Image (cartoon, rainbow, N blue to C red):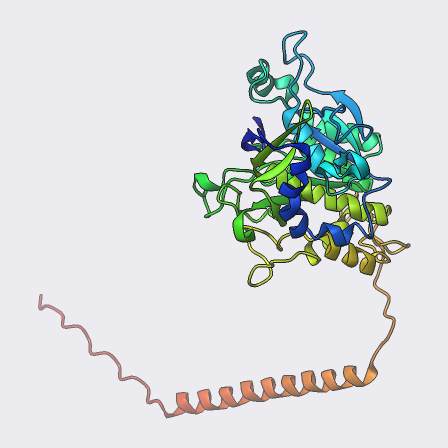
Length: 408
């Protein structure tokens, strides 16, 4: 069953456009965005938002949204207009550019110059086809199809502020397809953390966040500690603010909500900043930049609540610059093809070629081994001699007395 990674939201009500930015200030400061924007604002990057749809006419998103395919078609009755609340909310956190003179009013996203590709793969809870969508087998692999669609249409980052309990093979294959083409995937860790731990002491695993290759994002609350609802399990990689986060809603509205959904969108925005500066950087290195640049790192460097810490955009960009000349992909005639198994029958690289032989160390280790062997042989000889002397000193046992025989 597919569900939005969103704890119930409340409309901002009296919040006017000129008040929105001030209510965003704490999140912007936590992510160190004013400093990060001196380096990158996400220009040239497309973030696919796999969600419930995006209101492309919202004044804080106008001109930045491409409306892609609706993979939920047929779930709602004909003529139903989707509310597109959750998707618009997430898109604004990623790429909102504000409005008014200098874009000073309204929602500013983490990557305000990035583009959004809206791909509809979920329904809001209140949509009439919600139950049908979550029960019908034909919608089982909509996320997988949405991932492939986004990759084929040039997405650099895919935001999935969604979660479900069960994984599918099609989703795993789609994620591998995306990563192989350099696309960074970011997903919500889930909001079941307050409902009790599953077997092993961890909150349930959510998908697609728990697939290898996906950045699983937890939410933090006051004090940048794990929010009580945020899932804590070993899939969690990083965290971001997820409580009282303000964003845009359909019809130029503004909403305040909490959830790992919001945290995920913020991290997708930081990934967009990195890809803007380093378009060819592999997903693995983008992830390394996110984790190495994190602040509020747990004792020991990692825990299952907030992963490697809270994402910091400026530090992540600095780390990306540092590692931008590196690669996690081997190349050359000796590299193993990851699509083929190791061992017999594979196109192995052949025998290992010794580049340098330290003859002095070889002689020393050989001498140590020889000495040890001689010592072992000598020990065995001593044991044999002692055992022989013990047997010689031990008198032969007396013959057993005959059993008495009854007289006939």
